[in-house]
Image (tube, rainbow, N blue to C red; front, side, top):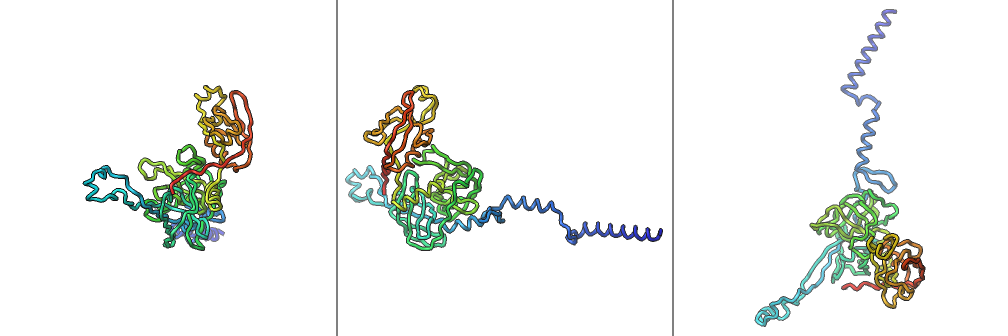
Amino acid sequence: MRRLWLIFAQTTTVAVALLFVIMTLKPEWLAHAPSSPTVITLQENAQDTAASSDGTFAAYGFRDAARRALPAVVHIFTSQQVRAQRHPLMDDPVFRRFFGEDFESAPRPASGLGSGVIVSPDGYILTNFHVIDAADQIEVALADGRKLKAKVVGSDPESDLAVIRVEADDLPAITFGHMNDVRVGDMVLAIGNPFGVGQTVTMGIVSALGRTHLGINTFENFIQTDAAINPGNSGGALVDARGTLVGINTAIYSRTGGSLGIGFAIPVSSARLIMEQIIQNGEVIRGWIGVEAQEITPELAESFGLPDVSGALIANVVRGSPADQARIQSGDVLLAVGGRDIRDPQEMLDAIAALKPGEESAFRLRRARNLIEVTVKIGRRPVLNVKK
């Protein structure tokens, strides 16, 4: 019995020693794998992955999102003939004799660049109005290297959007996203042609939503992002982690002309509505009542005896306009349009513009210390005159 016990003890000791040696020198021989490295690996991968189309996460960053969106983003090159201002020396007859009467008035070529987004396979391209403004010729460079002439379908200077078209079929159109899915902190990619260096992708997050009162456009509702947007990116695509369009890159805040991490894009919801109107009508049709409004400051509220600063103070009424016919007066405070509360002049402008010309809408106002309600027949907002 004693001998059997010794054999068992020696066998156990040798087995433990062998196991220790294997764990130390050849751990891969063991079938069991610890769970902790797997958790660490998943956490590290999650930081540089992007959501794929089925909602799962794929490795290698945002390559899938870029691959989907890049073919639909184009480079736009414009040219125009401009005339220089008359030089003071042209009043000198000796100068005119040597250089000719048309020296200062001769047209000189000017060029510009920007970006655009293919929105349909049959050649419609969405871009910024300021990219194609006053252009005599527009050339579009596709991602596959083709260069095509483009024509302006229509534009909307007040939102800084325009639609151009090239003669081509089966183009790679962008997939439209939904603004309801966009949240502050979402990862986004800005795609365009910055400084004319070629197609470029930059990454950032959605920094803020609903930015207004920037003085960039008449109608403002911007996405703010820290994805680098530089000159030449205008009109390009802001896409989400799935490669779907969420905005049109439009402007930057910069003291140097380069990106400082504050860029602005027109939301896809607004861009799509305006694009569809331009394609259908050649222009954007908005409501109008013919008033000028100003923001109510605490000083104005105290001066007019108002309970708060909410609403838009009517500063002027155009004679013969729908507002004039509805007996709206200067000094009235507009509080609601069609049941929608109005907090400031920008909200007033947006609410009225969304109404259809010819329809009637209820307006709630404060006049002196009384609340009144009037019905206004909406007119059509005059089209902003721009140089073609």
